[in-house]
Length: 260
Image 1 (cartoon, rainbow, N blue to C red):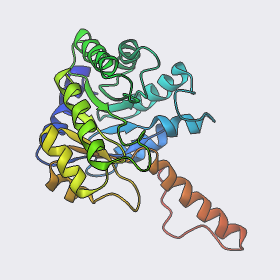
Image 2 (cartoon, rainbow, N blue to C red; image 1 turned 60 degrees about the horizontal axis):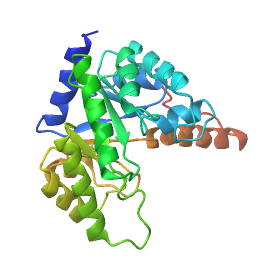
Image 3 (tube, helix red, strand yellow; image 1 turned 60 degrees about the vertical axis):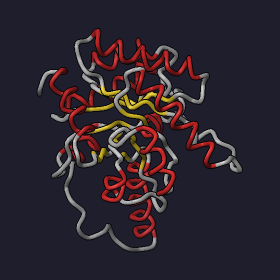
Image 4 (cartoon, one colour; image 1 turned 120 degrees about the horizontal axis):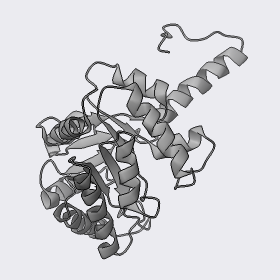
């Protein structure tokens, strides 16, 4: 496996390449090895929601950090591609959490702002960037703003776009290479945020039945699209469908592959 600095640089280069980076979120070693072994996959991201669910915890930093890091470290050790970790909101100390994540081989990560006061959110971004610099790597921070996640159902959409751009610009100025805006799915709103942040600076999550295809996001100037908890839900949906068929007197689906 390449050294940390090389993996970090590879991950950063993938975010700045002309073609969009598609990151599938994984939650354990077998999901990681299956995804990493799929042709065309160049990097992985972990999903905190999915890892927490694997151990029976609710999302939102309810899984102990030690347990979370242990699983992420196992994932890193099992694959030969760069791994980005969902850091949630940093577990109370974003810089220290990233330092520990780097120790297990992580070279990038998401960090939620949870719509905290902007100066606090920027300070957390700066702490992450500093932790990467202290470790001698270009840690690829995907600075997340929850402008859309925390918005009221009747919120003015134009104001949400403006706030996402305002916070995103501050995160970029603080050293984050890209900004993550979950629940941003409308084509015109995506275009407006790209215009505000610059091409190759915005990352999104693909939402089943709502998001644009990756090729169209690339045309709009989006740098990266990931899958969050939805890949685990895809797997669990297939599992439940198979069980339903068996209980009804059927059999497991044809074409099932020995991927483990």
